[in-house]
Image (tube, rainbow, N blue to C red):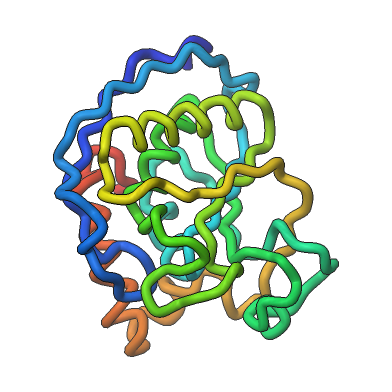
Length: 223
């Protein structure tokens, strides 16, 4: 991968209902606008990097990022709070400060951080504060936990581009914070969709989101 990121043209295609909870599309335009985004930032990591995203329920987030070529693994967990080794019950209670997140290990020479951000913002509603559809609370907030200055600068600039372009009817409220600690969620949360694909929630909620995601990123999916 060249250290200098080439100019990327993000074509926003209307992707509805891609968060884990059902949500209204009244605050989202048809995302068929073109946002020109040119990165002058250099990724210090060429073959191995980590990204941490919070975008509502981590079951859907995990299922979506696992589809992308260059993604080595996706782990569901908790970040951004004050409690060490929190349980799912504690996080859901909203008292730990943690968000449900996925930690994505990826190869930047195959999938760039730009592309992960593209997937992140398309796969949930970043304009709703502390809520994704019916899931409400700070644990479901839209957040990027950056691991280095490269990720920080890129995320800040991309968020600014989205707001200036009017890609959404409302402002993007995604939190951008320095990564501190990640606590892996309980084992039954890991690889949830692949292991529980026949469960009603997976069939009715996760599967449709994954299929719509595949249509947008069809050229960048694992075989």
